[in-house]
Image: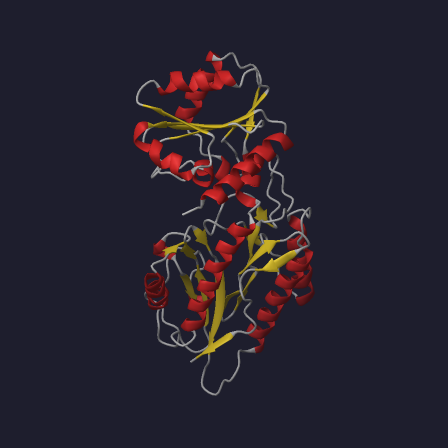
Length: 395
């Protein structure tokens, strides 16, 4: 799923972040990660380990993985860790021996976070195990959340990672284009979902969020907008806006986009003024947000620029403009535009971060939303998706 050079770059970003924040050691623990996922391991050591596993990284550049004998060969194959130690018994005793190497230490990063799920993989059981181990080595320093370190590992994506995301996004664009000949009056949301899922099967691809609600389809003003599953009992009819929220996943990289269709009625050749005005406002809001996004910009600035457009057009403010995406549609981390309380997480944009931008407006014809994927570049922000230029008209 991820190449050795890609994992090595992530490891380098982890070490650079440890030095940036003057943290001596970062410790991650996981077990049976096929259902008790440790997100940090997913990004740095994407093996589906069974017995207990520890990954220890230091600001001096050392990295050690203590892993069960059953998983050692796979971990070694990834090649991003300096040292792989295989064990069969006494995991905790061997973990203590490893930690002794890096003492004395003053700051230890652990994977807990109130605001970033990607840095919150440490279970209470494993926390207690770590406390016992640190007590055994005489650690008297400070524990802190790894969220800002994980931000650099996960969000400061390399050009190779951005290219992987962009390939997936462009594949999703082709599926959207093909759907314009399929979507029509009389189809249910479930019909439309089945069409998109047939295209995923043709690509032998996966979904960037669970298949049950992917894509989510809202139909007219009669449909829920809660993005769980498309309505099987509601059928598109003249005057409806159809909104399709679709996320593809190829080779470990995800997409997340929304497109809006309008069902023409008898004699209509274009969408009503209400729909067209909303579409133009959404387009202008996204353009304003993209223009305002650049490294060092605080996350609320693009949202505020989008809201200036909405306010001028007479629409309510956007609460949250978008979210981080990449490996999955929702990747934890910071949102693009939300000002919910974040104390511990640095919420400035950084080069390589990938986001959605998805302002929406509720009209009397249904929900209109355009969701684009973007990447923060060294000089600003660019689209990964191909922006929708007009409301797509269907009959």
